Length: 210
Ligand SMILES: CC(C)(COP(=O)(O)OP(=O)(O)OC[C@H]1O[C@@H](n2cnc3c(N)ncnc32)[C@H](O)[C@@H]1OP(=O)(O)O)[C@@H](O)C(=O)NCCC(=O)NCCS
Image 1 (cartoon, helix red, strand yellow):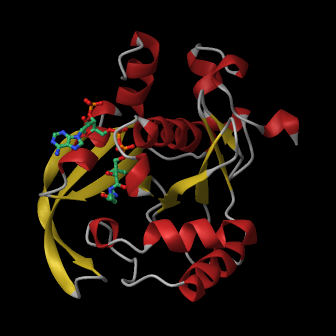
Image 2 (tube, helix red, strand yellow):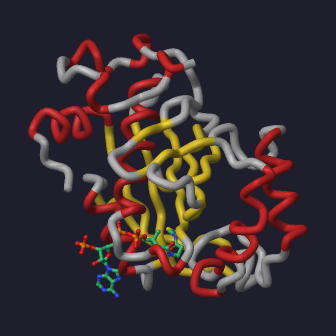
Image 3 (cartoon, helix red, strand yellow):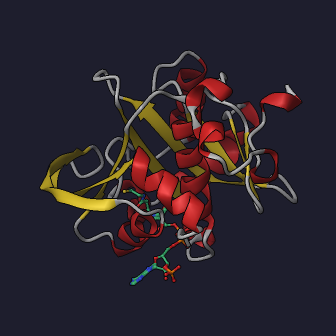
């Protein structure tokens, strides 16, 4: 399995190495300078239920219940194992000590050319660059391993931090709309951003992403 891990120093910069046929794993473990992104498992349930039980998180994402209980966390882990949430859901963990920080995912749409990026972190881990690092690792993995042309991301218009993460990853504004928020039981105003493959490749070769 080691050969299936993605790491910057294992990947060259030439265009041919950025094409999906070079890497065949759909959902590999991802390594970044400070993080390991891996499948959620039962050992995460305590930390997951503790961190996710926070309205400041639930009100910013589309499908997180609030309050969030240990049973919700156990159900989440169980469903990730059977693909019931998405095929590519990750636990974001610290590389140095394995601490669970939050979750992220990148899910392909049925149109075959687009994937959608999502993420959240426990509040005590905010503003340390972790979401940007995780989002960039996921974005790189998705373009390298899938034959997609676009990755989309959406955030509430009030979500300054997520907008900044999206912008730091090179996504470009597409428009606004309404999205459903489970915790609020309401539709909320959201911004839609998109990163296309050509822009991603340019940003990688320019070293232009934060
Ligand atoms: C959105 C979220 C994942 C960001 O995680 P994070 O690890 O703090 O993000 P990063 O540290 O990589 O980047 C955050 C950026 O937002 C900026 N930021 C945060 N709060 C801000 C504020 N109130 N005003 C202006 N900028 C702000 C930070 O300064 C940083 O930008 P910088 O690197 O240019 O300084 C985290 O806040 C979160 O989990 N929120 C709740 C769930 C959520 O919103 N998920 C995304 C749904 S679209």
